[in-house]
Amino acid sequence: MHLLFLGTLALLVGVTFTVPAQEKRVHRQPDLSDHDHDDARGYQFDHEAFLGKDEAKTFNQLSPEESKERLGKIVDRIDTDKDGFVSHAELHNWIKHRQRRYIEENVDKHWKEYDKNQDGKIAWTEYKNTTYGYYTVEGFDDVDDKVSYKGMLTRDERRFKSADQDGDGIATREEFTAFLHPEDFDHMKGIVIQETIEDIDKNGDGKINLQEYIGDMFIPEDGESEPDWITTEKKHFSEIRDINKDGFLDASEVAQWILPGEVEQADNEARHLIHKTDQDNDGRLSISEIMDNMDFIKVSTVTDFGTMVVADHDEL
Image (cartoon, rainbow, N blue to C red; front, side, top):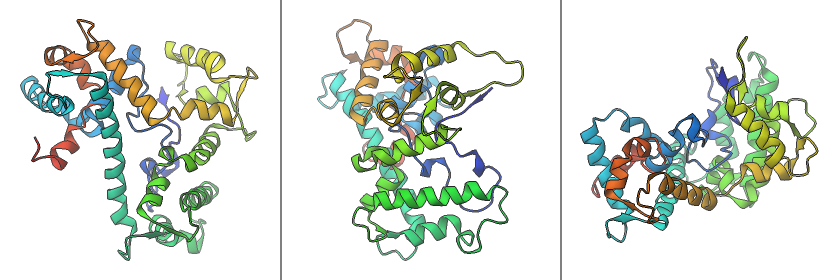
């Protein structure tokens, strides 16, 4: 079975020039997790939502004692009023903080890579030359799928121009952030929708049918039957995603599917985590409840402890 995610550019595999990887392309939702939010298939989404992506990876390698110690430090930071409990508001704010932190770190990493003249701005020519190198001059004739790579260059330029609000061909830090993370900027929402449709719409009719929708998530191997979650996704397509019931997802329906918004997603994840771990049903989490549910929390989004250790060492 192959699990495919929106926007994945498998074309990049095995290519030796510097076209950016998936992280430099559209994120169809704020970066709580790349995994599906389906408890029946595991808690990895929640794991990364509570811990953060980097810490979710390192947390699994810790002993139970080390896990409890580090988790306690994280909970202490989430509990801003120091009453010994984590409320919905505190958890909601923490998840939003982790989202913003991821974006800032991601932009920091790429800023140094692309600001070649170190003038505090990134021109389209700097980005293009760094990303595509001599291919922008010589063409893509020695690339196996030159049509796709030309399309990638065109797509990057279109997104860069949309992010470059003053149209001077040079991105400020804010504009470059919009280029890397268009899902977080209102004026970039159209680009997010357009790129998503382009990624999934295989027949080029500008809409997404059920086969394309499922095909973006699951391609069965020979003789493999569809898992139960595919049946659920088909039901979601017909009953929830396809609002006008015409058998397709148009741009407006795609927008409602992929752009839930940072606040809504963070709020929903906070409610979900409390629902799963609040044993006495008082609407908040005690330290003991969190520790008793450590296996669940460890596979959640709240704990990006790996980057936290580096960035917030003095605080911990």
